[in-house]
Amino acid sequence: MRKDYDVVVVGGGPAGMMAAARAAECGAAVLLLEKNRQLGKKMLITGGGRCNLTNAADIPEMVDNIPGNGRFVYSSLHRFSGQQVRAFFGKLGIKTKVEDHGRIFPVNNRSGDVVGALERYLRQLGVRVRLETGAKGLVVENHRCQGVAAGEEVFTAGGVIVATGGLSYAHTGSTGEGHRLAEEAGHRITALFPAAVAITCSDGWIKGRAVQGLSLENVNLTLYNGKGKRLAAESGDVIFTHWGLSGPGALRVGRVVALEKQRDPAAVLQGKLDLFSERTARNLEEDLQQCISAAAKKSVKNLISSLLPERLVKVLLDLAEVAPETPAGEVIKARWNTLISLMKGLPLQVTGTRPLEEATVTGGGVSIKEINPRTMESTKIKKLYFAGEILDVDAHTGGFNMQVAFSTGYVAGEAAATALRETLDEVDSVGVNYD
Ligand SMILES: Cc1cc2nc3c(=O)[nH]c(=O)nc-3n(C[C@H](O)[C@H](O)[C@H](O)COP(=O)(O)OP(=O)(O)OC[C@H]3O[C@@H](n4cnc5c(N)ncnc54)[C@H](O)[C@@H]3O)c2cc1C
Image (cartoon, rainbow, N blue to C red; front, side, top):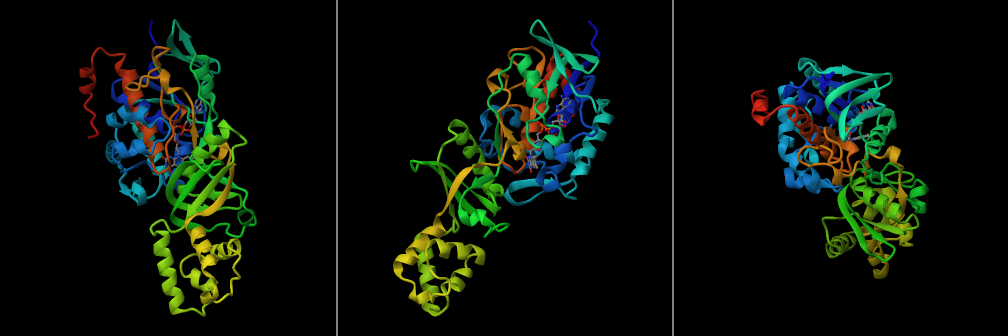
């Protein structure tokens, strides 16, 4: 039977656009459906609106930064690595640069240019892009996906790739419709949860806005359960808000908090913030001792303010019950010990996380147990593929989620297109190479 298209891709985010591009590079006639008026709406806001394309980490390090089923994407990362993503965009005229923590951005910091380059490339490849067209159902017959229904129309296809994203920042289009499509096709959707998400705390000094807006660089944040068992330990920058902690370091711990709370909503969790991650308590004590010997009459508040932001110093002194104007030399040893232990482990009463809608990434999704990691094809329905955040895969911030979207999209696009051909050799003759 003649098909309208070789491949129909649902969702025009990074995963869907890459899938469409790769399928077309492999010679397929491709239709890309996007329900928004524009492609890549979420991609435009990544990396603070500068488009954090990928990360300079090598593949093992990438996998370490994908706490949600990182090993599942190992093969995709090999097939289309971070370096290849950079080379791909380089060929489209987007020069990239590496920033702190290996994060990669376009040199001109303009996410619009990155999305624009992808759109132009899709046009150049002859991909048909239908905007404002939401997929409403999959056409499945005899355990084989035959097409996509969108409103009154049905687009028949040799293969269908669903890349509709997660369930956070719904205004960008990620509203979970793809999860319904997958479920209707017989796939299991694992419990969704906010990953890469800010943490909420009940401590009075946080809720009282004493440190709201204060950011700390490269601190260690450790999470414990009610029995004192360590659940997570991450380092990175954090920002205090009036409800808790945000910033990359907090976001890394957020997914563990969310999972614990999902498991047991009454779970008691405590955080400890090491404000001096590069110094031991002993080093810190020695440094403070030197400062005290040099200026015993200086107020304890001023003395510690040479090491930490003043607003935070006030919180520490308050918790240690030391009057701020006390001359440093008059603070008794026991109080100094309390202060040092607060500096090395400022306690936080962790109550939970911000909601899924506000999470940078959605954890959970289409169960990876029903997906072939080498092709992204469903093991339940032939010619049905999934790519990107719709999968039960989530990564830390820093370009790793975008890389997962690009890698899985690339693999799905290639597999869907090549499944229609007899051998991979024919694909090689297309001659597109990003090494
Ligand atoms: C504020 C913010 C900052 C981020 N920063 C970073 C970062 O710095 N680095 C990083 O790696 N990641 C970052 N991410 C995560 C990253 O943006 C996502 O992981 C990535 O966009 C997922 O790509 P995707 O293609 O799978 O899904 P999406 O980008 O969500 O795209 C899915 C697309 O499918 C469309 N769609 C949905 N349903 C249908 C339907 N029924 N029919 C047709 N179309 C449909 C949607 O409109 C959407 O355009 C950030 C996310 C947010 C929210």
